[in-house]
Length: 157
Length: 204
Image (cartoon, rainbow over all chains, first blue to last red; front, side, top):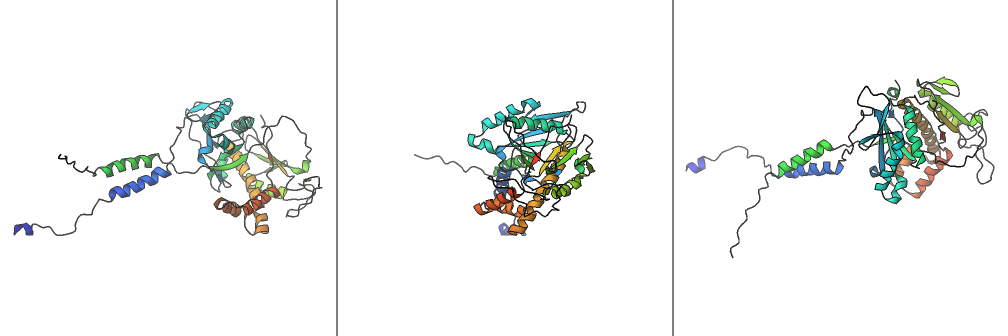
């Protein structure tokens, strides 16, 4: 008799059996869309200039990035250039590009693009020096990395 | 032979493991798409060929280390460049570049003022951007952006007139569905308004 009286009334607990499925779904989404941050910035994070006429960089695997910005130490003046995980001089840019080329298939080399991520306060001289080095070794496709926007007035204050 | 019964593995902690991985990928993920102003650098050649370019076919843009701009020796603002560049490129005051020994033809698609003292033809119009080593990069990119904007607008105008669609829309279509006929149109627009930008050595 008492056996039946003990039975509780009310809502049954929501089943959490499908929780792993939901979590896995999210997990796969992030796994697929993720791109690992491959470099730690040794320089101050460049504040990219804004531009309206931007093109998306296609084929991410064929892009090599060169960072230009100020040193993290405020006492050190001048622009620093970073590739991969080290700070280099302008004259080392060609060897960086050669090492990048060595990682790609031969027929992909001509589609390789160099993306220059430079701080808007950096001086044009540094960027033009890099451009000249790139010209020397026939790495002709470049992209000035910018944020997309229409208000350009913050670029030159 | 009595087989020992293995109990079912408890899958209750599966969710925890999945959560752990999920949080890891959430933290490491970056979804920003890298975008920027695309430029093709000129190839280096050994032989110096002297090409005679008329003064009127060159639009001189000079920017100094204080980010001040001179266009054709007049002090202007960055926002003026697009208008000035468009006026200059689209002028069409003379004959175009001779192709295959045929004499150059006047520009029949230009809508400019046909001023004989400005550029002859869009295929001859050269924009020269002379910067100083001390110019800030933000300024430099802004100028490049304005020049790009000028070319894009001219191509847009011509594309709307000829094909009823803007150049941007054609590029978008080509991205979605690359066909030969679209490529012909895009290449034609690029030929009509080729980007000729020269950057002399920066001032010290």
